[in-house]
Image (cartoon, rainbow, N blue to C red; front, top):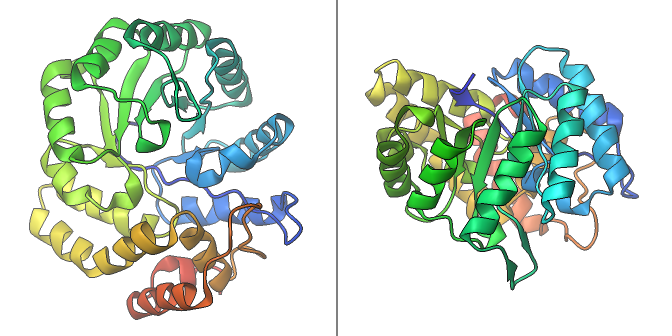
Length: 302
């Protein structure tokens, strides 16, 4: 349950910005068919910041129902308020989520909790649910989570079993965190589209939570590595690294949607305003790199 690839499912909209639940179901089927060990929904790469509360509930219910137990589902329930985060997490559990993922509490560029506030926040969420918690250590929150604090959260609060580390020098942080937290940390994962995956696996990561662009490839890399076939994992990863780099540095969350649209999985690759569409040249570069490698995302719906 705490190893492998758990891709982030994008949220699909039509050209007018309304939820497209038919495309959303095909996204789920693609990710499962691609060999995902689990799915993460309502995350930053799912444009959770552009969703209304009732839409979050609609999406969580629709996707968990459509997964139908084929793989575990993580629901992202981040919020500044411990009360709201706990309520979101309880609701995710009621809908069938197997885990929840949260960033530390923050609002805007300046409103942050201190260390004791962060501990109290995660304790309140853990007390509200009976499913595991993933702490997301991501630059978007602007909250520094030193390894000593992360280890304290993991060892002192029952239910916190996983951490997704996607900050600079992730491998070094994972290595230190694994040493500090010991067996209480059951799932050290990385993220950030898997751009540092090999270094993070070398540091002790057991899985990755990348975008939904090439879960078939990144899952194979992880399992080859964990099976002791590092050379094979490295060779496969190296073949796709230019595409991963292009996604990470040029496209962001729109890359997955562009290739899913190109492959016929979804009807529209639109994001909600004010997120701009990819520049035509940037999109063309992405598609060209992908076609050279022929990933499943371009073939699955054909």
